[in-house]
Length: 467
View 1 (cartoon, rainbow, N blue to C red):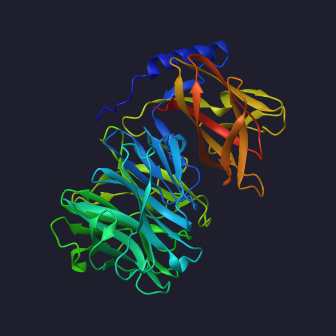
View 2 (cartoon, rainbow, N blue to C red):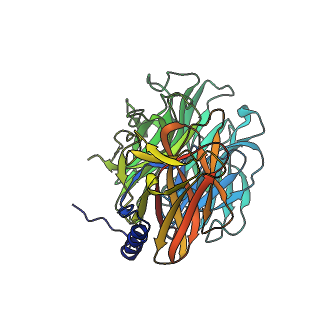
View 3 (tube, one colour):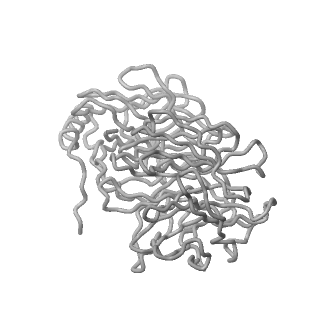
């Protein structure tokens, strides 16, 4: 069994934390953990993660009115990463992706003018070494000569040749979304006719109208090009992932070179509904493969989605074995190469006002911190850290406030001005994750949560280095 690699910051930190908690009468409240619950982004859809040679992950998702890029050293810290937002113009900006091609950065995204029938693909270019710096230049529309409706564009590189793959309409009416491929002469120019490589045909692709094949993503292993795509209605529990393969040496502009599986390879299971539009990456040390995907927050919640991740393996024929979505209250190991995290159970805090700990059927320790319901209510945690710096504070949180999409608790670190700590609404005991990048001083730190807008509960808190 391979020994997992982790960074070496934990030893001194744990001793200081246990000492701190022991002095406060909470011995054993802090512990070193190498696992997590697999919600990584509590709200969002169409995740794209790119791991660059600089050791950073670059992440983006659908934000609607712009393109936002996050930068993180860890997969579990994506939501609290440094970020920059890029204005693109247009409306309904969907499924952006960031790629590094030929020594420059490119963002591919779909937008329209307020009419879905006018959705088309566009691209931005940045020659800066860091995509969060420099200037993003508009390279315009990416299209073949038909100029039909197009979304979810991605780039496949085989040797020095680039191909563009996207979801589009055959005509001008939304009857069926098909997958197309075309050859590129550079990252912003298509130079061949589009070739249809997939159309919805099986029952699990045609069970809702319109029929949908979308969200193509490419993972190459050996000589096999794996094109994983999303099928069925994205607004339904039936949304799932399918697989099409081609040989690296085949003529990729021939439809016959692409072979579709007759069954989905990833679908609703274990209390996870509508998993789809996945992205694929590796752990920080490169030894593990991970799928990052969105799913409905609740049964039949449609486009109200969150982002999860889990490791996957490979079949003998070099196709991905994704298994099934892991159950929402099951733990998984942190990606190999990420730092261990210090964990404090929510119920181990110091409570004031109306706040108190209570039972939690789905909580990690069977308890949770809650009832922070009045202005004088709080729960406070004392965290001792060996080295000052920026840390990710990741809390397993829940919000079931009636008629309120988001709640907040107010978080204050070492007496600083309180700031909102956002918790999406998907029901009590349906745990998500709230993250914040915080500066912690060497020695003891006091983290306090107080009443915000609506109501929220805390199952546990993980703390690990941001960098």
